[in-house]
Amino acid sequence: MLNFLKLIIFLVVLVGIAAYFLSHSSSIFQILPQEKILSPAAVSTSKSPAVSPTPTQIYSQSTQIPDYLIPAGFTRAALSSYFQKVKISSAFASNYSSYPSQINLYAYLSGSEKINVTGWRIKTNHGEFIIPQAVNIYDFSGFSFEQDIVISGNTNIYLYSNRSPINLNFRLNKCTGYLQNNYSFNPALPRNCPMPQRSETYYLSGQCVSYILSLGSCEAPSITFSNSLPGTNEGNACRQFLNTINQYTCYQRHHLEGDFLSNEWRIWMNWTNYNGLLDSQHDTVRLFDTQGLLVDQYIY
Image 1 (cartoon, rainbow, N blue to C red):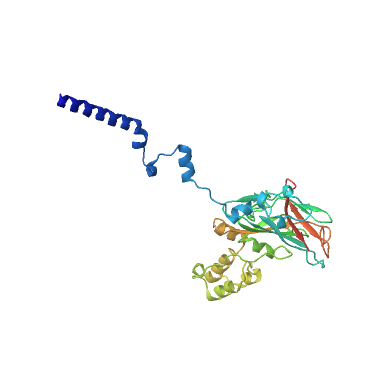
Image 2: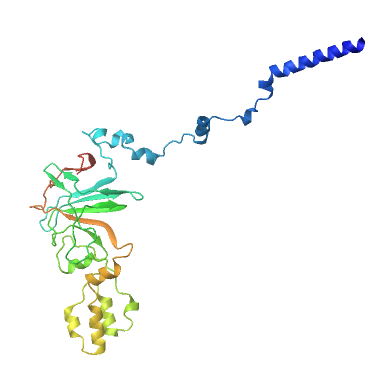
């Protein structure tokens, strides 16, 4: 009888323990706090915390341009997406008929960014000028065609009030300085043509080499000197080499080089007078994109 009672008590205790475990299973077997499985949304949020934009990112957004940079008389909505990317670096109204007035544009573009500026308008208190097309790669063949001006990197565009001697606007390159020998560009074109290497002239006479070394960059050899050379092998060799110092050979030798093209463009506005659109004393020069939105303003 005693053993039977002990068995009954044991069974009651066992049932009670089982009931306790069943009623508390959710808390006993739950995953530890540090091991909780997050929902996909929570995982995404936890792996991609919000990052504040850098000052450059803020500045590049037209909606974030500081109020003090917005020119008087213009609203934020009137600003071009190129605002502050292309600037009027200077405007100069010449008081001398022998030297042209000019407007200089400067663009600082990062990475692979490019901007087509053909069709943009320059407006002053006296009128306006539309930026035209220009020759990108001037090859001296006489068949260079103008196309839209697409700029990148650090670019200067110089606009002059006078007329182009060759009736073309163009981008400078390593060889365009030779044009100054046959045409009167005002202002003169930069003379930074590649000079002949000494290794190319080793077989020439001392007189010939001395003459070649005396030539300035982009300077064409004198026909008088060439004709004065004797009809010997040395004279003929020198004469033949001198015939290669010109714009055509320069282009053939260097046009595939990575630094052949300059980041400088020359545009001639063909104004009927040397001041043109610019007031000789004070003026406001504005640059607008093809949508009529303000790119920059310059006051002098």
